[in-house]
Image 1: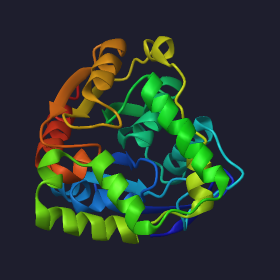
Image 2: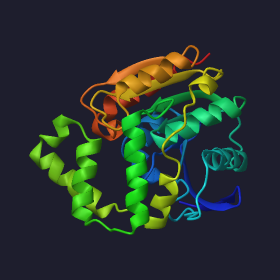
Image 3: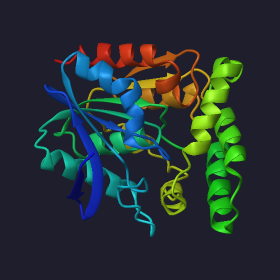
Image 4: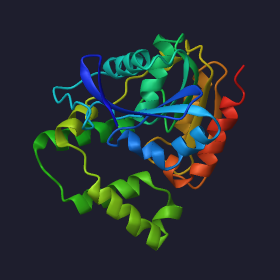
Length: 268
């Protein structure tokens, strides 16, 4: 993946396929390569050009340990699109990446043809806000939890009961999660974006065609949050993917890819 200097940072990105461009924006703690397991092949096979990248906080993109804002992340996407001469493009984001996509659609509607918003919301509720504050406090305390413990907690928060109850599958997931520890400075910087403020009034002004995908077993961003978001954005579609937790794009990729491609096929 090449490194490009955009918006005053070094950003690691990858550009695959040819055709109309789609930018995929990953959630917190994961790199852009996560899209390459399922979504990149599905999109390039049907003729899209797909751009993935590592967000701020995920090396080899600059960590920006002093912190950053959602506006900085939106500006990163805008600058990368300009560098690659994408013109208007489609965007898919999940979790934090969907937050970036929502703000991008709101502030740069001329750049976004369509937006798919997965595992997303318009605000933090009391429980998720408390979790975000607790995670920031834990990080700032300097306590370093064992990687295996972190992997188990992450699995229980992010995967569906179907996956958790599949003994071979969960062993594989735990191994991957244990090895996928995030740079601590980058993790702290990304945690600074939470809890999410209430953006309900702002998102009512989004004019870009949007499709919201929630995952039925998502504990981090439950379907009711996605349904609320879809109800706020004028004309937005809404779908709940079954047998999937917060990592639904990896757990049930066939259903997720079908939903994305059907929405893109409805472009005017």
